[in-house]
Structures are given as structure tokens and as C-alpha cells.
Length: 137
Figure (cartoon, rainbow, N blue to C red):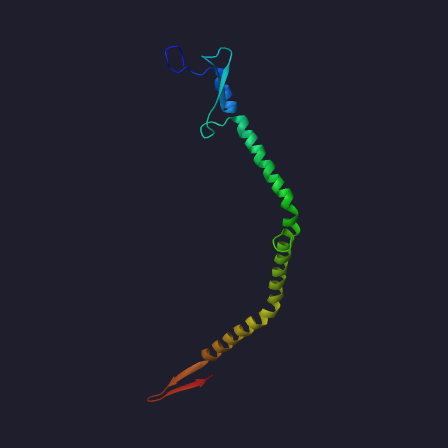
């Protein structure tokens, strides 16, 4: 506040401090030589350096979490990369094993359908005056 009670505008150094750290300093009116530090709400302005520090802290926490749980994720019995690869390969081999045994049954059903078609296609219906005759040619 100035001597008239109006809010002062921030100077370039204070604006740079807000952009960098999300805080600024002002000289005290009541205590000469003293400075007051004001920190803005992180919701409004966090600042580059504070955002960078938060990012690095979160990355360090994530890396720590990976290092601690990495072994369990790679070679655990139930939930691991090794177990998932093993189960995937087992499933593929089972599918490939079913193909040769299921092909004959599929081919047999196709042959039955073809045989039935040929029988019905060669069947002729003969009609005389009062009777209907079926004969196979």
C-alpha cells in the first residue's frame, strides 16, 4: 500500500519472482529495513521452480516405487511379466494344437452337407395324372 492507502503495482523483480517461485517480497512500512515475503496460493500461481521441484519429487517417488516392486513384477508367481508371457505362449500352443484335431471334424461335416446336396439335387419328382412319384436318377 502506498501512503494514500491504495495498492501498489508490483515491479519487474517481484513479477519475475512470482513467475519463478510463486512468491514475492515487499518492504515493510512499519519496520524499516525489513521485508515481508508473500507466497501465492499454488492454485493461482505455483511458479516454474516449484513446479519443477514437484515434478522431480513425483518422478523420484515413481522411480522408487518401480525399483522396490520391479522384481515382483518381473518374476512373481501370479502377476508378472514372466508369468504373462508363459501363459500367452501356452494359450497359443493350445490353439495351434486344436487346429489339426478339429479340421477333420469340420471337413466331415462339410462332406455330409455336400453329400446331402448331391442326393437332393439328383432327386426328380415325377408327376403323372393322379400320383406323385419320387425317383433318384
